[in-house]
Length: 105
View 1: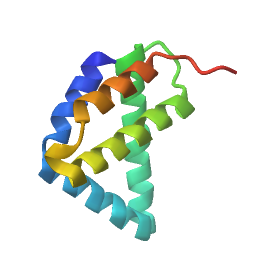
View 2 (view 1 turned 135 degrees about the vertical axis):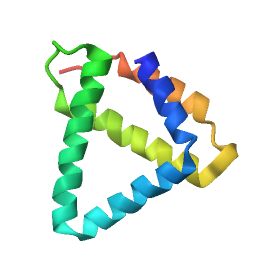
View 3 (view 1 turned 60 degrees about the vertical axis):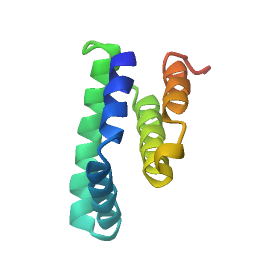
């Protein structure tokens, strides 16, 4: 999880890539064909994320993976809007601490 969170932090530094991602995501909400393709890309990203963090032999827990991606998307959006005032290191460290926790059934 640490390696993944560190790589995500580096991606957040690329403001042009962040702006492009959210621009495409916004367009996907309005365009059904783009939305379908974007959704497929997100499923693939979830599967890759899960395998990287948990190993390729661990079945994907879609709910946990979706929650982590939603959190990362929100963090990325807030960091892009807030700029240098956003406590990115602390927020990612807290998220990383949650990643290892197992939810109660």
